[in-house]
Length: 166
Image 1: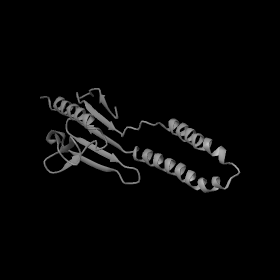
Image 2 (image 1 turned 90 degrees about the vertical axis):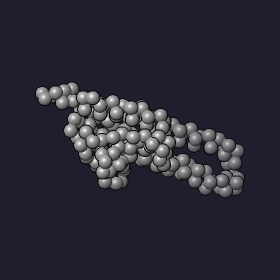
Image 3 (image 1 turned 90 degrees about the horizontal axis):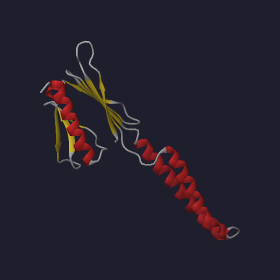
Image 4 (image 1 turned 30 degrees about the vertical axis):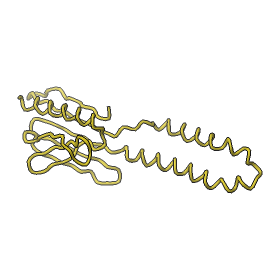
């Protein structure tokens, strides 16, 4: 799952808090990246053996180099976008949401958790998940799949109800 809940045990005053950390899922780990680039380079180079010593090799080399650069650049960009992190801390009296995007300042939203409403609605994506306190509405988990957003909505509503005691 690209998101994870952590629950802290009740403190001396009986307060429980929940922390959600959400990150985009990446199916190709860094180690797999090295293997993918290496195997791709070998598979592209194999047919080129027949062209060694010919003028055609020099005509194809720029395109092969451009292909390898494109793969490398595309995968690196994907890893960079995978560094997005959303951290939601939920206590009886406060909800803090911090979104960390690479290359940008962190965006932080703090409100009273009692007034927060969790909603799934039609929006720019299927099952658009938002949090609202009546004054401001923010998006949560834009990088999650619709099924993951529905699950997260249920989890978040359950945790809010547990904190409110209803």
